[in-house]
Length: 457
Ligand code: UD1
Ligand code: MG
Image (cartoon, rainbow, N blue to C red; front, side):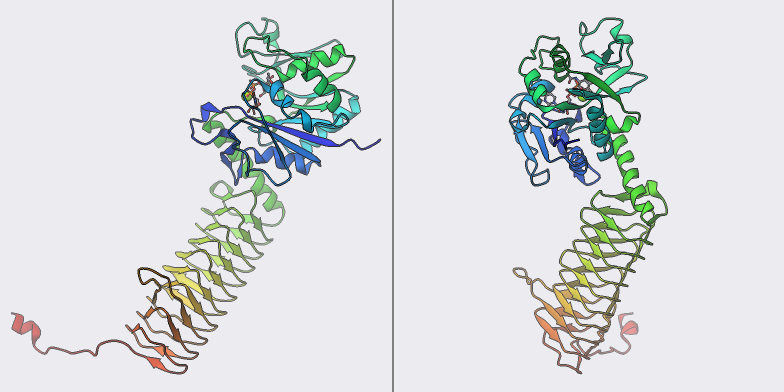
């Protein structure tokens, strides 16, 4: 059989007023992607050669879908049939066209491929994905003929749309279809808005196709989550639970341990290596990458962070930073953008590091702030060391060499350089460079006022 090009049309021009939000519905986040990106990615994974998102005149979806996805504009929301018509210029006569919704995110590549296969097997011009609901209120009901082919869909939102016996039907239109491109665009040209809502209904193309001698069939979809739509934020929360579970299950099958999946958030784009354990309370967001044999959490938040193998991150918050093999972070550490922690280093408790390079095997164990610093390998930073990196106008760098031992409460007033093997004295405010092998001490000498307490009397 000749391969038929698969084209996906994703409808995303509806208003979404029930979200009660300044943000358009299809741009609300679901596990790291805006809603609309989910069906787009599923279509691409199913092998769609063309994906067209039909958006509203605000062009809100631009920049929120992968490169190569076309955006068609529906100037006014005049119904699902009108929306597909707005994408007509992208639809080839020989294409198989799959219609998806921008607010139905959990459809999978397998479900799309299954629909396309059923469509090809039936030799139909339209194949509608349907499901049977206990409470079908509000959905379009599927009317079949004696052979089981689809006659039409009856809308039920407005009184007068459906007859009493049609309202008994529990098989509903999921809104997802496969069409033969040429017949679809032909039929869409002749649908009308002659109905209770005054809209151009996409399902109205079905009887037109039948009259034209084409077959219209239904394809049952059993898993209700695949076709579940989002109208408000309560439904968004329900679907997030399902989407999150899918993401975690996929990682778990690839060798990741989640100690408490219900207390773990992992975005769709995150990568995690095998034999890594994620303890409860972790949030892994964006483009975060975690290597193998890591121990993440409890309570670690990683945002666009890159962790290599064998890293431990307890009670940590790390953003846009690189952490090399065998590093230990936390408990209670904050790694900020532009930070690189090299292999075997340690960033301990109550430590904040920003835009800094911490050398191999170097330790920053307690209560320190290093900002805009370059620290060489095998150095030990004493407790409560602080870089004074900001003079009120500009940031300056602090350079600390290899194998340095700084004592507690050292302040580095940048720009300043500490040479290899150097030391600092406790409580020093270092304003001048310390040469290699030297001890830098910068503090007042102690005076004891004898008998002070008695005199104070
Ligand atoms: C539609 C179907 C109904 C089906 C139901 C499943 C029609 C007429 N009815 O009803 O049979 O049971 O889906 O959920 O198709 N959209 C646009 N432009 C528009 C109108 C809608 O892009 O002018 C988009 C919406 O953003 C949404 C999707 O199309 O993603 C469905 O629109 P919606 O108004 O929710 O359709 P329903 O009335 O639910
Ligand atoms: Mg709807």
